[in-house]
Length: 292
Ligand SMILES: C[S@@+](CC[C@H](N)C(=O)[O-])C[C@H]1O[C@@H](n2cnc3c(N)ncnc32)[C@H](O)[C@@H]1O
Image 1 (cartoon, rainbow, N blue to C red):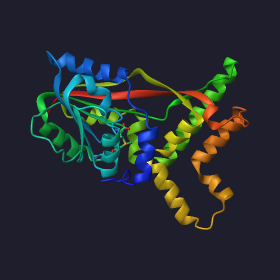
Image 2: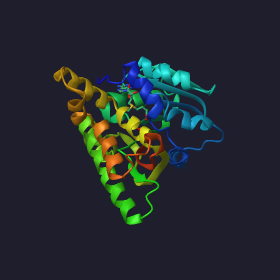
Image 3: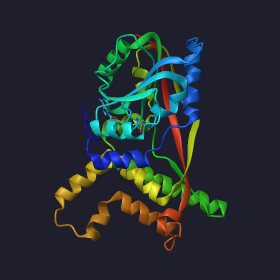
């Protein structure tokens, strides 16, 4: 089991900079559920496995009587509870392989930007135990977002900067992410889709895009909120104990990305909080019903 979101510095960063899921994702998941099940009123129980600080959990708030977010990390759960504004949502420490819920109790099990790290065999067995026989499962994620600069008026120039910035972000994101996660994320969860033991399943890679207005601080915060980035920095600092500030900059991807944006977007005189952009997250989903 990989435990990388334990430290309080990481989880505080995470709650501040990780995007919360938008309505378009909720709608797509519920559309699938409604194809296979008749829900007269609200669905009864949803569980969000590996909920972090509730980035997907709270998006479903209006659609279930009760929602439980579970995460292996006590500090993620602490942040989720602090940020929680809803009476029908609670957060508990638990794991994907040992979900603290009754058998056959769950209408919808979701897991966002996380299952690529699980022991999938054990997780599917546990999911089948807690889900109602006709319950649904939604596993979804995104890779690094597409970045589109604002305030660059010439469209060809804007496109060129968007392409170069997005591919640099993707490269830095992949460098700091672990091998197993990159394998599943690069294939947009195709191999997770193939592995889900379910009677009915769908793999959605259509253009489901979540759009956020960001500034440069938020872009850098997003990269730093990746626990693998933090692990990488820790390892490099241990290996280079006497490194000067200039040397550190050479391998700190967040500093390199910031410098690239300021220089190439010609915004060296502009404060980071005023360097504006759109971040587009392309979401892919594996949806399943009637687990076998
Ligand atoms: C990238 S975060 C995703 C958080 C949130 N779902 C989101 O979409 O932003 C991955 C989360 O998975 C949790 N996690 C990793 N392995 C887990 C496991 N086996 N069981 C439960 N949680 C796990 C980590 O503690 C972390 O909070």
